[in-house]
Every structure is written in structure tokens, then in C-alpha cells.
Image 1 (cartoon, rainbow, N blue to C red):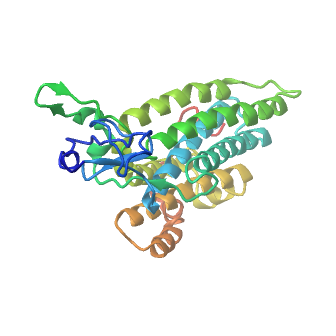
Image 2 (spheres, rainbow, N blue to C red):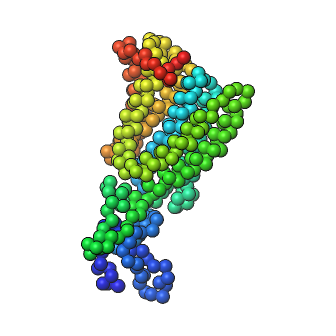
Length: 318
């Protein structure tokens, strides 16, 4: 056993404990290879269960996946509603509510089904670099001849949990969106295009996650910041060439209030994520995020007289 312990595994490989070894004083280990799901090689030897509670930044990354999916679905609802000139109707707002419920239920359930089951406090593996997200590119060669297949989820559960979320989101989409479609199609001509667009979008989002998860993990606070600022600017610019007073009147419409509040909250999420990324205290980051949330919309309204926001297109008010 001492001779085996002195033989470290190369790369990310590890040795799994063999199941039937109860008759021995010390556990028996397999040859070097991929660890089981939820395990990671420690000190290049034994595959050890991942029992460390994941950090706040990890939770924010998982929340970002849910927010991004919800925004994509809401975009299709709003896009086809504007084309039909029903963007301020009750059924369009119910469509946005359906998107929110789909993502919320899918996210909560995906967190609760992973160990420790039923608890919102997830356990995970410690990780420290981008290369750990792509172990398939770092499979080592044994004696420069045999390639060891040591591809497994080193960053558990940050890579697998979003896939669980996407599957559950599809499940809840078929439930909530079907109920919404039945309600929205009563006595009116109703387009099912947002429903099918969402069905097409989920595989695309899953593919993006499968290929770019590591890059997105380290850049999502910046992506959130840029995206939220762009969405707020575009949303307000599509209101047309109007004065500050007229712009403020636009936001007495409940649908505009809901959309702008959601985009503003997304901006606050980006600021909070940046604070956590740079090791800021959670409470301090939350205070800064709350204090800066109104700034983009407020800056736009105050400087509207200096700009020409008249943009044409399918999203413009008709």
C-alpha cells in the first residue's frame, strides 16, 4: 500500500476506492483514471468526495444562468408582442410572469435535488483556474505512450447543475407556458411563436454553456454589466424623441415599470457580482448595488435633452 501511495497520478487523474474491500484494514484503490461524479482527486492520489460548501460567487454564477435564460425567453415574448402591437397588454405581462416562474421553479428545484438533497447550501469541489473547466484538453500520457482518460467534472456542481436547470426549465416551460397559451388564446388571435422560440433557444443556451462555461464563469459580472446597460439604454431609446416629462409619463404604464424595474435589478445584480468578484464584503457589495441601481435610468432621463433617441425598428412604440 505504501508503494501505491507513493505513485501519484498525472494531470487531473485520481484513484477511486474499490467497492468490495471490507475485508482489508486499508482501502483498495483503482488505477489512475477519472474520478466519479461529485469527487475530485486530492494531492494527485485518492478521489475524495466534494463536501466543501460553494462560495457566494459560485451561487451568483448559477443565478446568472437562470437570469440569462429568463431574459432570452422574455425577449421573445416582448418581440412578438411589439410586432402585434400588444406589448402593454395584460396577456403580455402574464407571458413575462410565466418566464419568471419557469426559471424560478427550475432553479430552486435544481439546487434542491443535488447533495445535500433538500438543502439550498450546495457542496462542491474546490477549483482555482480556467483549465479545470476543460479537463478533456489535459488528459495526460502514461509513459509517453498510453493516454489516460481523466475527463470528469472537476468544478462540480458548477458545470452539471446548469444542465439540470435547463432540463427542468423545459419541463416547467411546457407546464406554465401551456397554461398561459390557453388563457391568452381565448377570444383573440394569439401567436405561438414565443413558445416555439423558447423551445429552440434552450438547446442553443445549453450548447453555449457546454463550450464556454469556464469563460463565462470568470466574466459573467462584466457580461451582466454591459448587457444590463445596453438593455436599459435600448429600452428607453425606443420610446422615441420625447422630452423628459413625456419620458416620465411613459413610466406610469405598469408594463414599462415592470420591464424597467427588472432591467434595473439586473444592473444591480451585475454590480453586486463585481463586488463579490473583487472580494468585497457581501453587505458592502449589496449596499453599493442598491445605491447604484437607479443610476443608468436616471442618467438617461436627465440627459435626454442632449440626445436623439429616436430609433426605428420592430421594438419601437407604434
